Image (tube, rainbow, N blue to C red; front, side, top):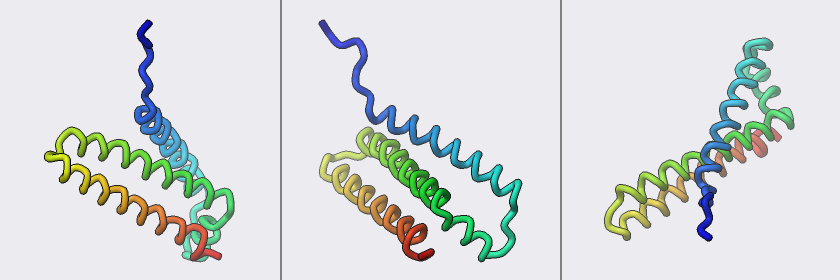
Length: 112
């Protein structure tokens, strides 16, 4: 019997990451609306609280995975020939890895 429910991991990654990013943005905007930060020291103190840093790190992980799925699908659909597509996918993966590393430095190394 044929499986009626195909596996859709990329679809779930993109939808799940979108839901998390929306929830994070709502909570962050409410927090900033209720307790505005005026100076850099206040911003840095807020961002480098462990719960906020962890939530922001998960936000950027969700953002990178969301971008990977979306841009990968675009490249698979439109980038021809295969060598160009593979090169662009490698470039995209490298760019997202650099972005993720930069976020780790900002959230966990620079604030230490």
